[in-house]
Image (cartoon, rainbow, N blue to C red):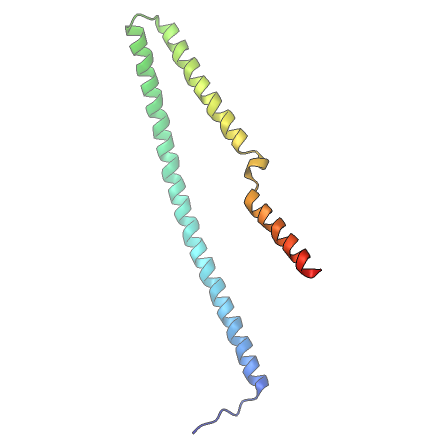
Length: 129
């Protein structure tokens, strides 16, 4: 039967060193994984940007086709362009207005979390008394 003659001080020192090493390795792993994820996000954003540019080009072609269709239906080309332009501008305005309204700080605040923290603080105060 073997016995370990190391002292408590040595054991605690080994434990501390092991925990430090483990923590450092976890940080290295997190950095490597984060780097991979950032690269993945960058590639994905590039694809989204490319798709958005192509979608915009397609929208312009479709709107031009609508103008041509209205012109062939008997509406003068200038008026057809004005009608399509005003309708598209109106839709864009409402979308931008809704987006900016939804992005206001009061709408982005984590209301449920704030309320939960308030309840927790209230319970802690009651328990402390």
